[in-house]
Image 1 (cartoon, one colour):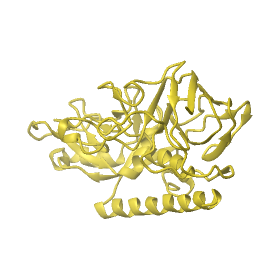
Image 2 (image 1 turned 90 degrees about the horizontal axis):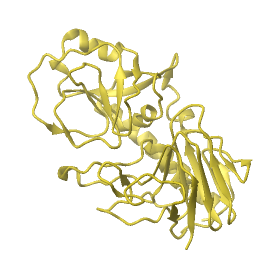
Image 3 (image 1 turned 180 degrees about the vertical axis):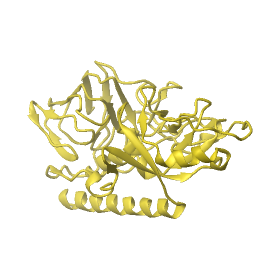
Length: 323
């Protein structure tokens, strides 16, 4: 059996796929990758199907040994990766001979790195997905984060190995305008309860430079800044999803992410568009973000641009693999 062995585990290292969809009405969150674009590109570089599972590594500090010759890809946070002691490029596909050791060091910036393998990580399907729901302890590898000594099965590759190659980070193509004076700009649509905030708060939402709080995780990022004042009536619990900007009684917003719960009663002041959630997920505590208002049509155009971008990388990967 082809497998990888975890010799050193990161602070949080999970088996993830695109997510466990179709069960939010049953109280089951999606639990997909924090940076869905980086995860998708890792699979695309290998010509894997989109639903193949891979590894999400938070803040590096991990070492993996491959039990046989494996083609793999690394994307996301730059962890100064090395294969058998030799530097290997990020946003790239590589071939690891049997017994090779891949090391990911702590990145100097960003948070989440992704390691995909040709054929995908082979763990059982649970409710149609291989992703890990840590809170509920199911899916992924025994429903938990990976630990030192874990032996993780790899599926059968369906694409020839081909030559190693790399691409430019997607920020250079899709998110060229996402940084302004060191502040990450997140496109957002006004939320259902925005008119129930006072006028000062409605202006502040778009003008504030919000700081990412230390109480942030895959469920949601807490932002620090001036308090937003909700003046509407108390809301009953209602459905929420990744991207929703909730405002708790403290007045400081929370942007829901991949592990977001399925319901909540906090008012919704906005929704970060899906394409920009990876930008937020890769921010560290203390880094600054601000919201830029966009329309639903703008969100659709951003989604289409990203779809075409990923499609172009897939075409290149197929060409380089000889298919």
